[in-house]
Amino acid sequence: MTSTVPRRPARKAGVDLPVLGLGTWRTIDRIGPDRLADLLAAARTAGARLVDTAPVYSDAEPRLARLLREDPSFFVATKIWDTEPDAVEAVFARQLASYARPSIDLLQVHNLNGWQANLDWLERQKAAGRVRFTGVTYQFDHAFGIGGSRADLAHVIATGLVDFIQINMNAAEPTLAEDILPAAAEAGIGVVVMRPFGEGALLAAPPPAGFLRELGCTSWPEALLRWVLTHPQVTTVLTATSRPEHFLANAAAVRSGPLGHAEASAVADHARSALGAGSGR
Image 1 (cartoon, rainbow, N blue to C red):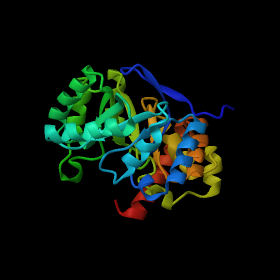
Image 2 (cartoon, rainbow, N blue to C red):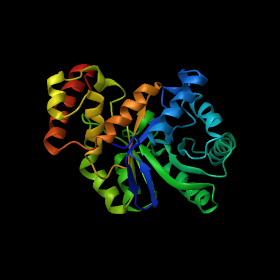
Image 3 (cartoon, rainbow, N blue to C red):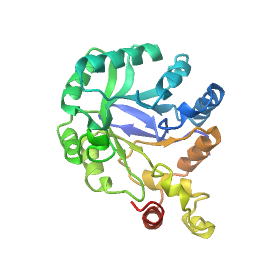
Image 4 (cartoon, rainbow, N blue to C red):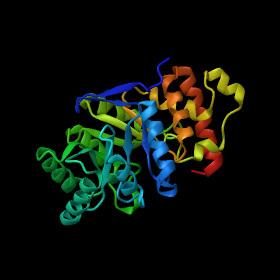
């Protein structure tokens, strides 16, 4: 079996991306530079050279950018959060300088914050060659009191305003698969999935070993990742970790491919019960 992860196409963007990427929320800002270098080396080994970060992730982005200056092979996805044009431009100028790149691969409007004005600005940067692809991210309605809504996300997709969307979806929270994924697929928009483990909540209640054997999985994280990949509309799933060995284990999991329909249903049933019992959400 190949040691690198599979790739999937993002039709509108015209690129193939690894099905696994490295998320950086609340992870790499907490580790030393040597471990961060090892983490990126693990991504190279796995053929998963895709990272997703943001200026508001503490100091994760500048630390990541310093190490990626010497490696342009990574696909860099980052975000804009501000809504004032001068602030957006200032942050973006710092991002370009920190990566020492003429353009960012994927620049996303974070949580659809100020999406109408920011998407207009993004299109201008794309036309100027400062951004390769545009996107928006969506976690939940009006995230942190200022983000956009699911209806806004649906509008962005329907009007073809972006190349990618990034969404919160896991086996316990699958509702975006009902309408958002089919709409994105019809428009050819790439889909990046965040929080496949429910920000760790789903890992707190793994099923018995016998259940995993029946699924054909060696671990609960493997089952959760393969559940995400059951949806062919998904381009990439992000796993946020600070441990290289965990990232390599995730890479091995996605190399096993999507679950079958019955197995995916069983994973979703257990995940929903586990999340409800463990977090009260």
